[in-house]
Image (cartoon, rainbow, N blue to C red; front, side):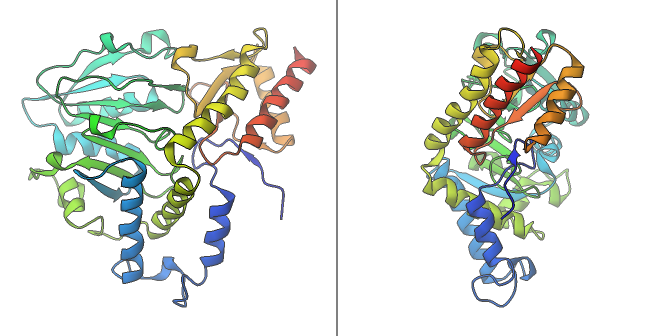
Length: 362
């Protein structure tokens, strides 16, 4: 087999090798049915079993016993930015947004298109370096919901607490952090995540919605955009991304076998510490983009003394089998996305490369 790359892509991202090999074995002939799962009807008993099992696996790994529905949808988290206010932001109400980075800002912008969106808190003036304190979050008592992004993929920050909203439904975009640590889902009315970071390949988006949020069907929007439509049809209203959901099924089984969210958190802390230690002991050669108390264990972002050195760092890293270390095009710098399928050895190799690069260029 060709040597595996050290994959730090921000999404689509690394998948467990074990999962890829299992999918490879079943790619042409799924469970002896004489065809690939990608070729079967989404109404077939074979796919319905995968659909139902995947929903139950996710609920189990999130620690949910009852009271929530799992929906498999398309369009990525970006579509959810619009679908959420379309479903929940009624005339005469507001929607509160905690703005902590590019994606939460995009969610806010979509909210403004649909109705009256307000800023509950923002750290933009501080260039996203630290997250708002709980006391900085102001919730409008007339809000239909409060939206937050729990992990900021581009900037490299992560909430360490769940905001108190005084009974206003809290909605969390967990695209780049889901199942990387245990969370109390009961504090949220809804969480959602594009699969392509921690759950599987791109193509499917997970929405986990509390039952009371689905009691009233919004009559003013098309059926396809209503969460109630997808809930009533168990995510089979239209043809789902069958292969992406199957792959997510395998990833969830891999997470469960390897200790669940608690084990993923321990490993992620260890992996991210390797990178942050390389930054913090560099004497300023590497400059972290985020204050230590707001750092993400998924996305580690930093700068070098010059943009020329950053370009050289990325170029040399590619020569050493590293992939995906260039920062987002909107901010530049360096970003190492060590999602839960990225092995410890990859982060260890990156830390060693960083030390070596500094010795040669510092």
